[in-house]
Image (tube, rainbow, N blue to C red; front, side):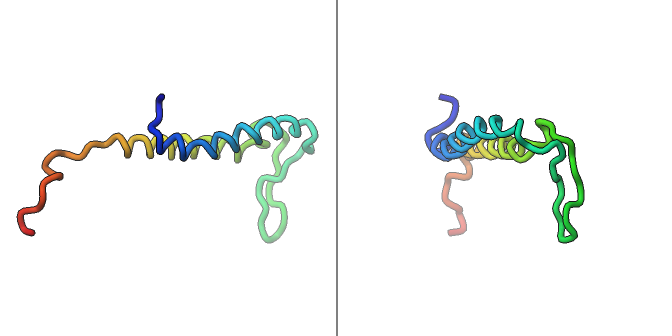
Length: 93
């Protein structure tokens, strides 16, 4: 397996959430309006975008990217081996 057990355990809820909600989002995509709000402020809607895969699923893509980045960081952190000189007790103690 590519990932260690702690990383797989952490990755499991993210993968389940993505696998469960992606088909639902794809099924709802044709029913979305032709213009989607992109920015909402205190003054109301500030920006609009035409309906596209990128505009409709932008947050999903951010979620996937963040999950990949954090998974890679967690896996690399667990694979780091400290230098042997760091394992000895300090001489001043």
